[in-house]
Length: 152
Image (cartoon, rainbow, N blue to C red; front, side, top):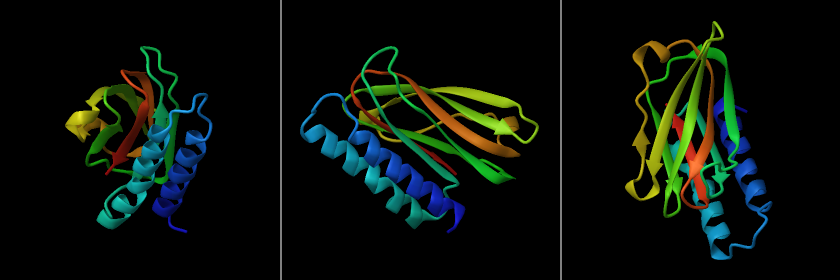
C-alpha cells in the first residue's frame, strides 16, 4: 500500500471512530461531520499532489480539547503549501508543526473561518524543505465541528 493511501486510510478510520465517541448525541450534525471527513480522502486522491491529510473533530471553547494529529515521512519532503479548512458554523485555531531532518520544529499558528473555505497557511520558505514530520493540533474553536489540514 502506498504511503499516501495508508495515510488517507488512517485519517478516515480515525475520523469515523471519533464521531462515534461523542459524549452528546448531536443528531444530524455528527452525520454531517462524518460525511465531510469521509469526502476528503477521495478528493485528495483525485488530485494526486497531497503528501499528507490530517483531520480531527473539535469541541467548542477557548481550550477546545482537540487532538494533535501527525504524519511522518520515510524520506524528507519539500512542502509546497499547507491548507486548513473546517466544518461547522464557527472557526478553528490551531498550531501546525513542521519537523526537519535535523529535529528542529517550526510552528505556525492558524485561524480558519469555516464559512470562508480553505485557508492557505503562510509557511516560511526556510521551513519548507527537508520536512520529516507534520502535525496539527487544534487549540480553540467557536463551535463544535471538525478540521482538516492538507499538506502538499
